[in-house]
Structure formats: structure tokens, C-alpha cells
Image 1: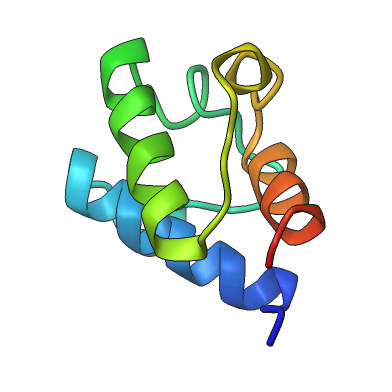
Image 2 (image 1 turned 180 degrees about the horizontal axis):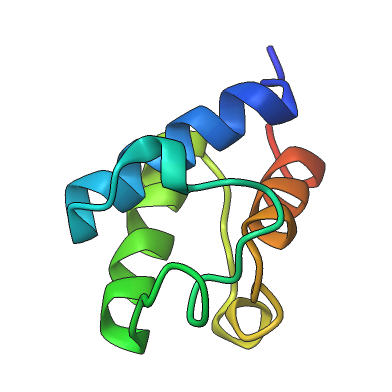
Length: 82
């Protein structure tokens, strides 16, 4: 069953928290991964790999650069589930 955007956001927040120590409440749809959440490219790749595992999606490397905001990642995962 496909997850809702809220469920994906919560799961993504959990992954970001595990990787960076940021509070899950900080991970919001309108936040930029690099500017607002201060996530570097190495941490971002780890987050992507963990998101692929958690949500059962494949995020190609050339797509990762388009995921600048949390909303971008949530939308991509929602549209590519299952």
C-alpha cells in the first residue's frame, strides 16, 4: 500500500535524524536540505540510500541533484512507490 506524503515525511525525518542528529520536527516540507538543514553531500547520499531501502524506491544519482527541498524528496518518493 502506498504511503501518504505525511507518512513519507515522517519516515524521511527519522532518516535525517539518524544521519545528522537533527530533530525530526526540523524536517519540514519547505526546508532546503543544504541551506536550512545544513546537510552536506555525503550525508545526503546516505539519506538517499536509506530512503531507498525504507521506501522501496530507486533514486538515480542524476535525480538526487533535483531533490533540493524536503518536499522534492517526499514528492519523488510518493510518485515512485511500489
